[in-house]
Structures are given as structure tokens and as C-alpha cells.
Image (tube, rainbow, N blue to C red):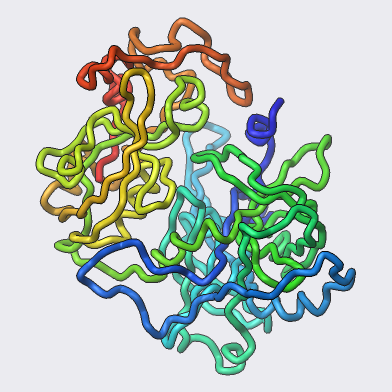
Length: 469
């Protein structure tokens, strides 16, 4: 079984730990170097000139690092926090039906920026997802209430903010913004130190090396390229830091293989990959209903397994393009598959929605998508000026793209909703954890107007609901 499929059969690192008899599992991320200039073009100035963001260090990391890492840890700890959340979880009843139960969870975070008004902490989306209450414990054990600034489910990133006025002067003097390394320059064999709130017991430290780079792992909603380490990644470490021998953050502790046959295989999101997303979240501002942005499509998720099985691209399949919308203006068509929004990977409509929510009408962003032409997917990148949501989407009408996540459907192998003309219906779809069998993917006769017919009414996946933005 290859690594990607094996990952599907294993347990992600529990981000919340084991609290109140509940186990919460998920994946993590972090952030890294000096956040670059935004790619967004807008008439509005959303950048905070007083914002201090974690900087990329230029210190060389010696291959002959000291075995004793206490000095490094002492320097990094003021940048690491523990995050505790209260969530409401739907639980199935023994007698049938379900009910809502309140649960507690814990994860980790990294102080990534601050300004005169707020402290900004990066963690994983799954740490704070659906949380009704969030609190942060700093290194000096002081506790503050926090709020979620923004999330990006596609990358499993979230930013938590705390008002500076709610933090004591002593704590403000104690904490500091993390120093970031360049994860693209990391070498296999370098020392790696994992720091986080393991099992919710408080900050702990484990030491290992960078075992591998660019490990491709299939998560629930997307495929990720991760750093591999043999430093122990324990439940509750999600959102914590993976640092090098110089104390620079190179990744965010994310997941591990959970198997009696495997030891020392933990994973972290490279810090460099998170920067554009984190900056967008931090610099986002509240927008009025009139300013909310819209692209003008209805789409359906194409999972990694589905994409492999049907020889497609992982991303967002465009089911419908709204007439007169920005999407129509740049030539998006039904059957196109969107893979990037403003140079950031997107794989789900939920993720695309979150990215668009950080924009205002009038912002200019790049859209990368693929179009099936003469049997091959051709990459196309266009710059689009986002329109006003109120002009194209009625929020109370799910048929035109409600924000209600229940309208989103992920298509995966085993669904027989493509129609009799879809490729692959004459062979057994792969089961969970089983690699799809090889076979021809969808093809066309070279006519763009007939491309959707190759999927037997693929615009909608045989009646699947859409999700519009």
C-alpha cells in the first residue's frame, strides 16, 4: 500500500487531545517567513501599517547542532500558546436519532503577529472549527479569551486574535512574535524540535530530525505536501511549532501515522506554504453587504481519489456560470476545474467561499483552472475583478448558491450519480483505503460544447446540489 493510501487508513494527530471522554482528530498548519506583499489589487487599503509580522531569519543552521536544545526551547516558548475550545458536537443516540453534546478540546498555536490592538495566533482550522468558546494560555500561564479572526479550511489554517487590552502588561512583555525560517531551504537530516500542548497537559518538547520533504499525503478534503519528522507528534500538538536548531519555525505540527507497524512518522505543514493565506486572513476587514465579493459560479468538489479514478484534476468542478458575472467575463465554462484562487490552492467550494469572503467587490485576483480540450486538460490562468455578491446571489435561495454548507457535496468514487455515459461506470469503484484501478479517464471529441456530455450530465453530477459564489 503506498503512502498516500496508507494515510487514509490511519488516524490523524488528535488536535484537541482527549478531554471529557471525547476524541477530536484533524490536521495542522503554521506560517513562516516575512509575509510578502499581497497579490490582491484593490482601491481599499486593508494593510495595517502598524502590524508586526513574524520575520524570516537569515541565521545559518549548523549541521552539528548541540544535543541540548534547552536554550532553543527557552527562546521559542514565549511564542507558543495552548488553545482550549468548547464545541457542540452532534452525537448519535443508542436508541436512534441524535442529540447535541458540549465537549472540550485543546490544541496549540504560534504567535505570528501583533499590532497596537491585537495579538494574532496561527493554528489549525480544525482546532477552532465550530468552537463556541476559545481561550488561549500563554507561556506565563495567563489565560485570555480569544476570537477566530478567520479560517481557511482548504489549507486547515486559522488565525485567532486577542485584544491587547485584555492582556496584562507583564504578559505582553513576556510573549513575542515567532521567528520564522524558510521551509524551502530545509535539508533532510536537520534537527527538528516539536513544541506544543500535547494531550492538553501543557507545553512539551520532543526532538528528532527532518526525515523527508515534500511528502504527498491525502487528507479528507485535499492533498498536502508536508515535511516528515521523527520528532514525536502527539494529540494536542496540532497548530504547534516545528522549529530548527536556530529556533526558527519551519512548519506546523500536523499529523502522524497511527499504526502498530509504524514508528516515528510525523508530519508538519511547511511554513512557507501558509504565508499568503495567513496574511490574507490577518489583513481582512469586515465588509458590508454591499461590499461582499462574488465570483459567480456554482460548483462541486472533486476529491483527490475521485480525480485519480476518473483521470481528472482535483479541485472545484464548475457546474454553472452565472450570466453577466465576473466568472463569465473571464470565460469560465461549465466543466472547467478551478484549482487556485489568487495563487493559493483551492480544492473545495467551502475553501473558495472562505477566500472570497476575505475580499471586497472590485478586488482583482488570479484564477487558475483547467479545461478539457481534445482529451487533455489545459491550464489557464486569468485575472478577474470580483463583483458584488448582492448582484448575483440571493443568500436565502440555496439554488443560487447559499452559504449554507449543507448544500455542498463532495463527489467521491462509489457514487453512481454521473449517469450511464460516465467513464468508469463499467468497472468497480475503489473502496475506502483501496487504490483505484487503472482505466481510461473521460475523453471528448475535441468540441468544448460536448465536453460535459462525456460525463453523462456532469454539470451537477447527476443531480448533486451545488454551492455558488
